[in-house]
Image 1 (cartoon, helix red, strand yellow):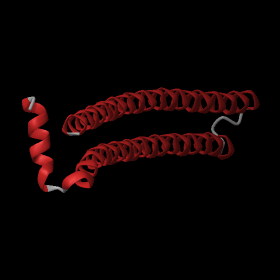
Image 2 (cartoon, one colour):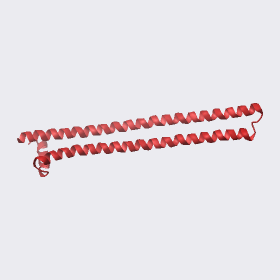
Image 3 (cartoon, helix red, strand yellow):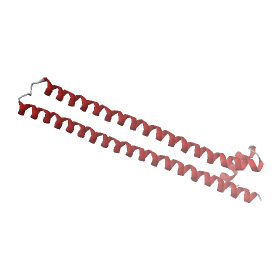
Length: 153
């Protein structure tokens, strides 16, 4: 019966070790995935910024071209139109920046949640081993059993 207990304890410890190792690997992979998501979001934000600037340039050029053809380039209407396009472009760029900041914060919070879940799973695995030993003969013998397993007794 003692041999069976030692085998069961060894299997429990090996299972816990495997569980902890896998949780750590999963956490590392989650961090890598989050970094990649942030890079993708940065690329998308940069693309959107360039598109906004292109749109603004095109709209200003159209207004200036039409005003030049009609001889109203220095009119308040043409100048107001150009100013309006510039203000809208600035507003759109600020929105892109805000989205990027919120996206980064979301990624950070998701990573913290994944880290907490990983830590909880590790704690649960270790607790499971402790509970198994406690169910046999009590918490006092837990240390003795673990020591005996590692000493080969």
